[in-house]
Each structure stands twice: as C-alpha cells, then as structure tokens.
Image (cartoon, rainbow, N blue to C red; front, top):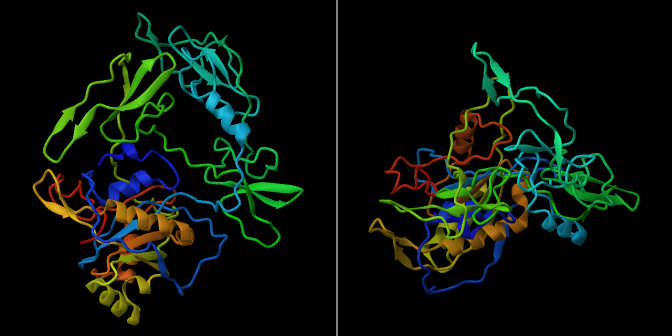
Length: 436
C-alpha cells in the first residue's frame, strides 16, 4: 500500500487507505449514486461528554463469514465554529528547520517553541547538542556516552553546556486547566493532545477532549491538537523522531537544515525494489520506516478498552444488497444489533488486476467517501469501537464483543486486529480490511 499520497491529516486517512485496497490504476466508474446518509441509529447513545479513545482496528475473526472492519483512534473534538490562529501558524512555519526537545541541535543551533521559558540548544561536545530548558556543566544523570579507563571502568561523557544560538520561544499553547482564550490552542507537551480550546463564556475557556453545551457555549477557539505519531510522514521532516511512518521509507539527511522521509524501497507482492536516494542529498540514513508490531494484552488489574460498538454499512442501490439490508433491519440483526449504527449508499466499481494475477474491485475511492461521511456523523466518538460491515456478511455483535474482551486490549493504544492467515503477500500480511 502506498500511503505517501495520504499524509497525516484530519482523521488519519493514510490508515483508511491501507484498509481497503492496494494502489491500483484508476478506472472509469460505471454508475455513481448520490452520497447520502440514508438512516441513522435509534440505538442507545453514550453521553456527549464521553471521553473515549478511538482506535484503528481492522477486523476480528468471529467464526462466521462476516465482513467487518473495526476502528478505534484517539480523541477527536468537534470542529464546528472553529477559528484559526494565523499568527501561530506563521510562527510554527518559520521554525520548521529548528530542532525539537531531545533531538540533536548541533547543526540547526535553534529550538522549536516549548516549555514555560523556551528551550535553549546546549552543547555536550562537538558532535551532540540538545534542546533543554536548563543545563549544568558536567556529567548528566543517566549518561550513556563515554569511554573506558585502563582498568575497564566506564567514564561518562561530560556536558560543556555551551549555548548554541538563542533561546527559543515559550510554549505558545495552554495546558489543560489554564485559560486558553488568548492562546486558542492546547499544548501537547503539557497534556493537551487530542484537546480543543472550548469557550465557556467571555471570561473563560479551557482545553478539553469534548464539550457539552449548557453552562458552556462550547465554541471551539482554534483547532484540535493532534496526537503525535512519533514518526514523520512521506516527504515530511523526521529530524526529531528519526523514524518514518510509512513502510519502505527512510529518514535521510538532505543537508544541514533538512532531514526528511523519502522512499527507498518499493514493495510488491512478489518482490522489493530499492529506490535510490534523490540526487543532491547528503544521503546519510538516520532511521527507517515503521512496521507493524504486536500489542500485548493489558496486565492484570490494568484498565482495558470497552466493547461498545458503532457499526455502519454501505450498500449499492438497486442491487441484491438492498434486500439483505432490509432483512437485517427487520430482524434487528447485523449492524442493527450494535449499540449505534448508520447506513450509507455506495456506487458501482469496475475490476482491476493486481500483480498477483487476481482481479478485484477497484473501490478505494468508494470506501474513502463512505468513511468521510461516517466521520461527519461523529457517532464514533461515543463508542469504543467502530465496525464496518458489508450487507452480504453475517455479523454477530455480541460474539464480536466477547472476542474483543478476551483479547484484553490496553487503553490508549492504536490497534487493528488481523483477520486472515493467508500468504502474507496475498492476504496483505493478515489484514484485508474486513472479515470475509
């Protein structure tokens, strides 16, 4: 899957692309139907003030032929009535070449905004300097760099604490619990990830994941603060993280002021082809691309994610799927047995071939459109899991809940669940986006 065309934006569209299809040539659409929300749930709704995390989940094998995609990701606050902060955007744009907290600033000699008093680039030696609030010359606690004496004793390196450049600006955003009327933004460094500055009245505004109208006007001042991915997207800077979010990309030094993620390997079902680093770049590789990794169950006594389900279905008008949808609704089965649900229209797609020799529907655009419409309802914010279900699939919500509970998924982790044991190339490494 080529995620490079879907950088981090909005609701993590890069992940949605990976769920539904490989990169294939676009085809003509035979028939297109109106993008319309057909019906909405009469099911029980959780309180608006529910502050649940939302995770990305692929699918869970439930022992029946069900096509479902489950998703959960981090807090998403309403964007209704949002006001931008042009001054802040300008400030951030001007300091993109500066280093972040904990990264080497020996070449940039400047630090991004942060901390109550701003960060200063302090030198350890000629090869390493770091953005810190304060620095004491000598050996720092936990120092791992150093030499060994003749007797074999480790001698930690000392910091010179020489100042390189000028001190950066203080954190321009507010911490939770502070009045954010002036800053109109929430500080990720001070616990404001996933939060928006919501107005209570003309005298007070504060950072929160969501807001319930009543005593508060709930007007959003500025944009929601995203959760840090911990890696750089294709074509974006990775100077701070030294890690790229996309598989097949490497964090490469271009020059003294730019280190970014560029594609160094193109993978197909049967082979991997190396891609040269762009001409004119320094070429030093300081990190690779992020790959999948297994999430361990929550420890005994630790909090686990809940099992409430928001389910949605997209079906093709004037097709056999209409009857399947009607039967499920009449029997309160499939998505209609979930805690809440929605139904959407899709449109016809043509088939296109893969490098496997197989041909499947070229429907990536169809499902991205459906997901975009689903996100607009904001119902997923009030459920633990979001489940995409095909009309011709059998979904047993209660059984799905029991499987999720048995996995003991930890709170606060982005997760998808694999759903097939096919050949890794044919089965997209165990995840085809739906239980089939």
